[in-house]
Image (tube, rainbow over all chains, first blue to last red; front, side, top):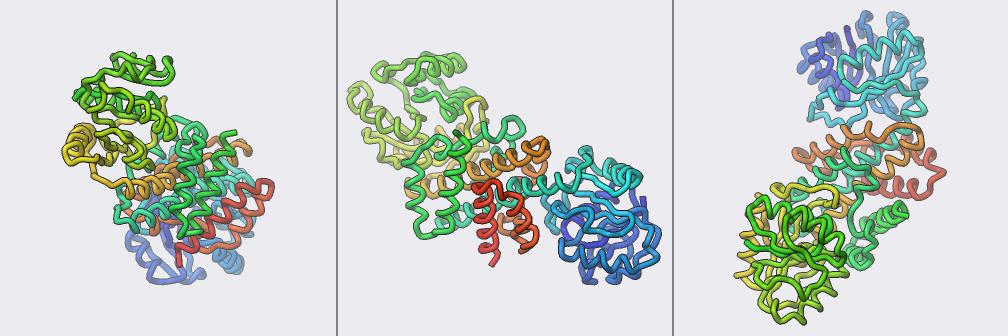
Length: 256
Length: 256
């Protein structure tokens, strides 16, 4: 398919590379800033623009990967472009309803993964969640999704929001736990990298064991002595101390 | 070396298998309950006992892998056994000082990993932290550790406590984030397994990027709209809602 990409951040970059690899034609990249548009367009080998009015009219799908605020603005601008009135626009956001787009043809292609601009994530194992406002367009987006990943599911906007909340816990909050650990270690001269085997195993065992059964640690075994010692050690950092207290309590509640 | 193992839980089980694989002789397993002592002894092919007075006198190292409360009790009992007065005892706990043991020869061999009894964890990549109350015994424990893992470090009891706090964040709290996500997903008919590629990538990228730079999500990009929507969705569950609020706030503080 011929694809236009609107946005040049982490998701847009990984998607663009995956589309290219799957044999699609990425014909154009749009971004508000010329710098980032050019960077991605050069990597992909296509043209770029910073002006939505200059979008080519003939792509099969226009993928919009921008932050949630920019999405509303871009939608408004697209409505005023008659040469794109029949085009299919899809956004890639987890928490945004399909109807945040008000173009005649609209849909969602949500890759549930954590994207960093500097790191191209292979799309083959990424679960892709698909939705559109017509069966015909759902099928088109689904066909595109199947060409990118082995894991494609249809999901309503309402359920996708729950998925996104869950992803915030599994990814964003879990990563922040590593940030807090890194701070603790580095202030005691221990490199964060010693944690990597533990972090790997914590992820790996979830492929075999449900997280409730995989839980270990002082809170899980009700070891008040160790928890109190840890809380005392964290006395100088009330923020981390409160997080320790709240998560330990929540682990103990899950045990009941 | 000839090794006696005191304890038959997750750490003891994985250690026993790793010792066997590295060519050591596990000569005996002790556990308070005959059932668990026998189970591990049978798997390893050695004798077992539920009576500390029956411990064989000639092992090079006695590894004590029990919970922190039991450790103190076992230490007291060991002091009353003259046939073990010259033996080297090491415990495997992250948060327990070497001097919780008061035997003449004492040390620590802390494998920083998450252990579940049902799952034998290969020790080759597990960081092992070593300490003893004499240079000679530190060298003995260190030699044993090197035969098990490529990652061996000497660490004082004080620094090991900080390591353990950090491990609670990276492993126990990160896993609990998955538990909370599983609850959210399962109550909306979405299987937890869709999260696995995201969890894997969250762990994998930390091999290349510091957790502060790896952070993504609504809190990291200051997306108040999405955060408020998520908090509203979690209205029926004040525990999860508070955790969402506190961790999002902490991510935003780390961004400053």
